[in-house]
Image (tube, rainbow, N blue to C red):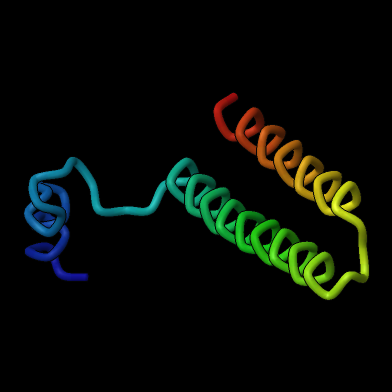
Length: 85
């Protein structure tokens, strides 16, 4: 990196006036958490849809479907607690 490029990054010109363009550990952790949350939410949505399809095909009873949905809501609440804290 040339000295001009280095000064350009230090000035924040390449980051719309931000102090730095570098990815910090905190930013990387946030990115990893958001990717994990999207994966978990997708998995829970898939689980709920599978439970609904199994109920529609009369493979499980409605109480079992509601129990699966309650477990999914519990997992979402735990994820929310972990992310906020």
